[in-house]
Image (cartoon, rainbow, N blue to C red; front, side):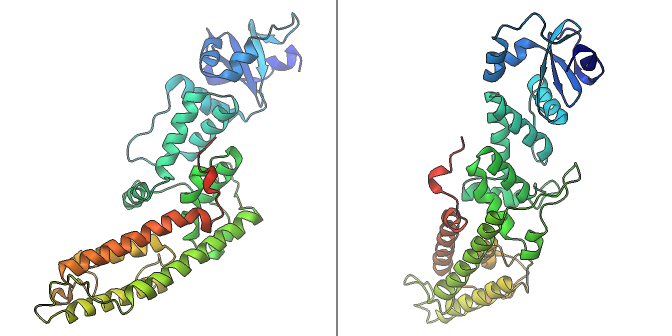
Length: 333
């Protein structure tokens, strides 16, 4: 590229500062920025600009030129984050196009602060603990609770070695039907659709099967034929049969959920078990809640809730194994 060709490229409308002293070029777009901003925050640019330049080095408007092999739009997102900060309003869905671009280039050029900030925000939507996952799911029922397609998150996590995002992303994806999984991601802003690799397709289908097998086991071992706890408050009243009947109704409602008769989330064992926990405290909507006389005693309900919560924790802890995620590599690089 000679100086004439450089002058023929277009200057970015927002990121071409008159007092800038270095020009970055990506896909024919010039970004005139400040050397001090780059070297202060990026190890790569600090090292790059410490190298003496030859007298015939490319320049434009009196500024040295650095040609980068990145997408111009992604570079713009990163530079805006560098100058203006990376802010995310509470309760508003994060723009994955922006945050993935910032994360990708901040990783490449070692902008440590930007990378940590972007990754921390991404982890709010794709958490590593069950408590954080439950918070995420509660937020999903708000008008702002729409999340990025998990296939895009898996693709980014594989590209940048971010295994901490994979547990939530694979589980979220496993809740879809097989046909929907095979169709790939939603269309990205640049009109593309991302598909899982053959390996990751096998991973998600195996994990999905493991989730379904586990929930069937929980129903069979913990709900079907469940007996009142030894601390049942109705035993002395010779009324413990009420608790037994309550468990039978809970089992019935659970099986209806799994079969898809009462919810479209039969492939979501964490949701289904949370419904079991909440079943007897609902005011309306289930045969158990609509028949207060059929509710079990508080001791039996507490015992059931504790059992089901342990099952939910077992699911969360088992997801890495079910989906082939190396538990020794869940920390991001």
